[in-house]
Image (cartoon, rainbow, N blue to C red; front, top):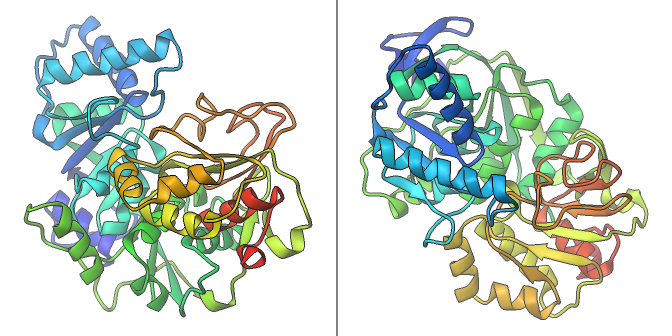
Length: 423
């Protein structure tokens, strides 16, 4: 069995499962945020109108809630959603609530690993499509809609069709001008945004073994853009050390069998890759930066669950240090703990000395809601994960997806730039 099959076998009480099997699996952790939470509450309200009285949920200790999409509150509706979430948390006794403006908080997919809320070998579901991110620690992590999350909250289990697994073997040493964002954008460009439809995308190989955890999270995060049910990387010592630094909880890592069967296996030599961008309006619309030509930008954005982890900020700061930005540049660390660490280590000063604006953790600009949306005809190079029409603002704007290195290089030149060309 693959690691995904083994995790789902354990969760469903089976000795063995195979791709295509339909199972009922116990869930270990559940996540809601200020957008998905109110949606789940609507499902609960509808059930109560039909006569079901809901006084408790399955296990409040296994549920956690973040405030991230519309914080700081963009309008009265967003502010009211925060109140709804707070009332929900209080009613059902959920203690893991990461409140905006009250200490540690941040983007849900960053908190999941930054706070070790999910452990290797667990089944984790969240009310957001990029829940796949947490599969980098060796968990089965997948996003779900409001109705399914509501069912899990009430019953502690949910059905799955065991997915087939596609394996991507990433070999070689990643050059210092590349990041995991270049790797995953190349994969999506080669295979399309639907290669993973209801499938697992798994990564291994020497390039993965040498990747820090922050970079691995970028890979699994964007399996969502390949349509995957989940993305996953088998745990190794890097994983174990990362989790143990953040939690005293005991866990049992799960590993696939040596003879596990994969639907497809694709091998890459990362040393042959170039810095790339995904042009509008698809993550699959690849262009090599040096072949793109000089495209002026209005905004450089370093933020989101994909592009504002601590390692992302470090790599961007290396390029920006000592320079001045020539395009509007916004840096929003993905969690308050990352912000504090970046402040302590001098990264925030580097960004501000260059003329960039540094803001609070939020999903606002990434989802085109607030905190820096794009106007008609504006061009943005961004560390985010989606670039469909209107994703970051006006439907007539354009977003180029890129690594933090490419975004940083572009910020200081004012045009989309290969990081090798600013050193």
